[in-house]
Image (cartoon, rainbow, N blue to C red; front, side, top):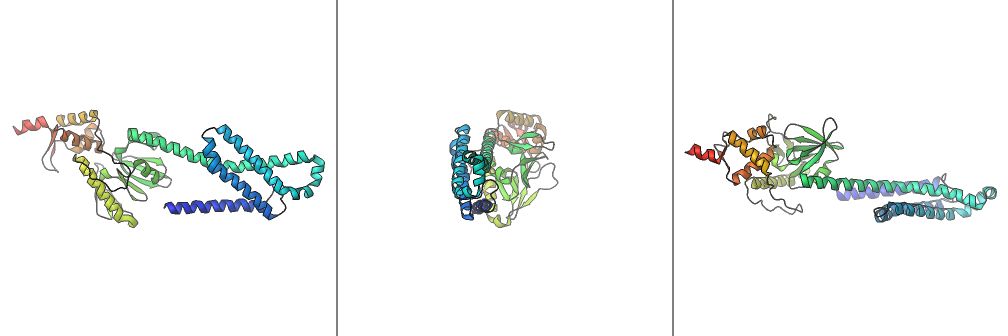
Length: 361
């Protein structure tokens, strides 16, 4: 994918250079004709050198330090470029424009055409400036989003009424790409939109908590129930009649299935309070299990004390805490021996340890 993108960028640059040179070789409305197609192409090459120098040198080195100096240098470079073009065209101009030179005078004639050429060069150099500004703005926004996500574990989304909201990462059930937008579905049967492709979400979330099972679908490991090698089954929610299923990317189904298996094993180890197995070097950092805030632990513990025998679904409904957070709270409370699970997996429930001891007596 990276090589394909590089090839496309190179081809677009070649096409741009060809268009500029064709324009200079056939059209000279923005300055006097140089006398031959060869000289016109040479003038076009001078302008192309200015454009690429602006994109790769002037903007990165000067604009960040001092924008005023950047524009002064850019105007100076455009004037120098215009002078070079006028020198290239002068042998032909002094014969074809002799009447205009005699009527206006050489300084006025030269200044008139220099202003036209300089204005044209500045207009051409405005395009690389806009491209670099857009890239820098996107990098700055991505950096801000990364900071917010790292510190709060919240994701910025837009609701149906175009209101900007922040939702917890743990509430994301799955994500589906829809054109230039990504549609985010949550565990409480809501969906939001987020501008940008799936690639931006993958870069934001990383590979520790989410897996991209196809080019258009991204799923958190904590809500995956199982994977049979060709399909992924999500955990059933209270509002779903049956578990949701998604088909793996046929081209990389084996690799994705192995990745899902590793993620499920890691999630089970974190839920059980064990040390997560070491993962193959696919990502740069390793994350430790996140301990829920004490306030949420107290809410879950109080709910179990008030409703002995309640299950996870009951706790989610009464505390209004996301399913993933409730599961982490239950795991942490069991490690602290404050609660205990009694009964079968299907009909059992959670009890506070004091209630368990009283029931046993």
